Amino acid sequence: MLSYGGIVQTLEVPDRHGRYANVSLGFDDLDDYVTGSPYFGALIGRYGNRIAGGAFTLDGRTYRLPVNDGPNSLHGGDKGFDKRVWDVEPYAQGPDTGLTLRYTSADGEMGYPGTLRVRVRYVLTPRGDFRIDYEATTDKATVVNLTNHTYFNLAGEGGGSVLDHTLRIAASRYTPVDSTLIPTGELAGVAHTPFDFRSGKPIGRDIREAHPQIVFGHGYDHNFVLDKGLTAAPRHAATVTEPVSGRVMEIATTEPGVQLYSGNFLDATLAGSSGKVYRQGDGFCLETQHFPDSPHRPSFPSTVLRPGRTYRSTTVHSFTTR
Image (cartoon, rainbow, N blue to C red; front, top):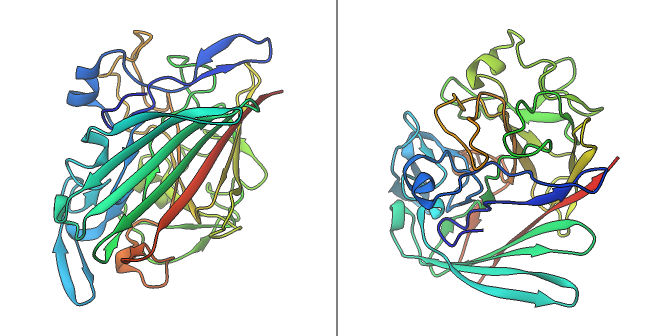
């Protein structure tokens, strides 16, 4: 990983024959991350996903944010946590090993109130788990929604399309969006729609449907409402299987939602660490999160963090083979 952006550059995982491959999209040069990365592998904050209109009101005061995605603010603004240099130190506890990352976001950075002190741990376990633990405190009321933006390809980085990966998401509902990808506020059922991944299906099976939500997202770029809800300990959210290598990734999280992004805007203008260009659908993201635009939606799980409270979140990627 890189201290710049807390970026996961490579994640080496064995296939069913024990052959290792990097399953994370990214570059082999720092300059490429600085100048042209679509958030490959990065830590995202202060607010993962979109906030409508680049503004929100908290305790009667309105805060203005950078607008960097059409009319909206995306992933914390044009210089979010993905473009900051984190302090990094080794971490070890029993057989688990990894890194502790720290960053202090100043009051007013990217328009957000409060000095936010963030600690993130990347942990590898002998069981084949990659765990991310998030923690944050603030000295003023603010909004926080942290996540990681790794693009996965379980066939291996540069391995071509992920649309044949089988995906199962434990979600009976999702949050439909408008044409700028801001949730409408509805929690819509997935039954009889392209968004029904409850039993598992290839990511690409319904991605060319004329469903208006697929048209808005140019594929999948939607938040799924996990059936388990917000939990104190990580619980199952999704399973992805790559049929040729046999690699399986299970995701468990404490978060109430997960954003499925099917690499819709990869357009063969970027070449990854293998030297191969990334085309549309060559990677997928499953970003565990609170819901997009929650500051404008009181019915969504709250993303408000107040002084004296601690933001905590954990997501576990467990790798096995079949």
